[in-house]
Image 1 (cartoon, helix red, strand yellow):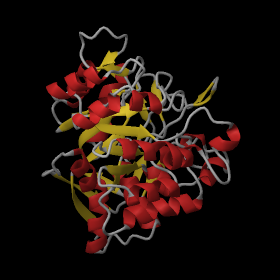
Image 2 (spheres, one colour):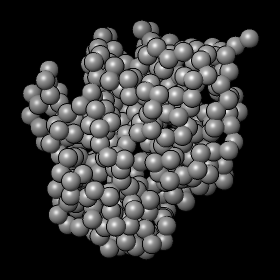
Image 3 (cartoon, one colour):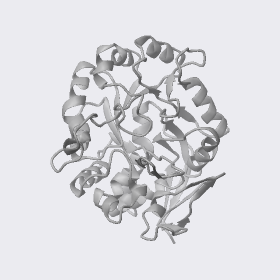
Length: 373
């Protein structure tokens, strides 16, 4: 009889659902893998950078985007959090007003031009100086950070001894922790030993999300054969960095590290200006996390190690965000599952495991786990 884990339904606390006709099928893909809640990234076009429909700023409103996601979910998601995209136009008054209504639970810092849709981002120093982070601290609004320094020379961006994420957690985030000790911060999709150790030794107000791809792969997997479906930001790093992430999630006392897939669908990964950043793991993330835990040495037949996996996937994230652990459950079963491209109208989105196949024209890939609802 195959190994079967009964788990609380889980929250994907970092994912991309895009816009228009893509939203509904992408939300359905998350529902199909046992999600009960999502944190939906605001880097749409235009970004989700104002609170209310009636606000005059030339952006998508949090109110509107959250409503679109709710409609797509047909009431099947218990929680939908949309962080406000921090721009140069964000004010402390906006933070206070959004928090007062209950709409605003989190804000997202993007390094300017640092990733997909980050052209509206502003330097972190601006939000320290203009009162935005102080207002977030006062109103219990969580800061989600894409933790990379920006505007770096290539030699510093990704080098043998340093990189953009390393510099962010060594130099940029520590002053924020010192200045705003009550501000809750999520270090999103961390990739380095520097970030993992920084979060582990940090205060209880600091936590981190980790993606399946950063637990499974290194930059070598990206470069060998140029597997561009693994191209994401932050980039996968080296084997020692992956080992640090694995150590963090396998720690039996882990309460700080949790699931956030950064699932990012692209109908066209290669573009005229390079390669679109993001790995699509919608519909298959718990399977990939289970695979990653096993490859890191976790024995999921052991009840004690099953608890470690359940804490990472289902408990630590909602606890940090002040959400209830789900009462409903889903089943993760150790049985092979074939996966295929996701076709949405004229779009064809390639799931990460399919994109990692040596045969780039392969029509399917097989995972060792299946989700049953």
